[in-house]
Image (cartoon, rainbow, N blue to C red; front, side, top):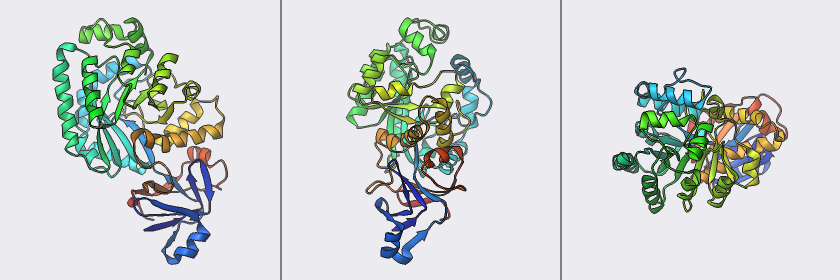
Length: 406
């Protein structure tokens, strides 16, 4: 059992001053430091001035297989970026071996990320993810819109999914990702979702990331038209947007991006109790615009914040992601938005990924960050934590210290 006494705890949208926690694998209780000192005496660890206990951060959407990218890919527009991915894909994947992926996972841990959703296109990150100290929801991605190749593509997806299921354990959860409405044929979408439902697997998908996707799905035209005609000999979209969403009716899903939805599509997302993953840095670098938070909130849709991968980001750091979002959504009041962003990478993400963490509260897993700041702690702490980087001194996952010295 551990008892940590802190200057402050960020817990459930509340700042608790001079409080500590008692935990083993899960959090047993939260109480004032004075009370805990009286009851536990020498068992208490005093964290000292300007110490803060934070819930571990959860990154619901990351692509690790492209972690070798630094300046290879083209930013500024979705189609130039996609063309650069196609041209450099093999080199980037070959340049990122197990050590590269393990280093990227460790960097996320140093940035306070205690759980993540890894979207895997090829299965090359399986071993590193299975060995990660973090909780990992491992999304095996299904892609392929050519009906002639449907059986082969689904067979490859199954091989990767079964391999990940062979590594299943507490903290590592094999799951299913459907790439997008424009890139997966309806026949294999339905097969994959039926399997996911039967085996109670978590599900993720990309949806409405770019203007090109919007035009292709609505009009079979726009910037995607020459891409599909030249590369895949396709002249019309594999699905309409509403058809695609209808396949997920009984499967709560994490939909990533959702920058260009229509009102009726948001209504379907809300009706299906789905979650939206907001990736502000990726959306900006690929020229896709910004998520309309007001519309998302008006439809009462749960949303989270994620980094995407290093193919469309410069860091896998949720503190940085939240800071960018804080400035991107300038029409929102600052402190309420900061609290929303903290929820998005803790409680909201945990609920969406079906993980028992994301809150400093009794009976939740003790996934915790011991952090320290060099400024006075006040009621605007959620803002200051994004503007003034804190030092993460220790990281606990299910009560076990996986990083740090405290």
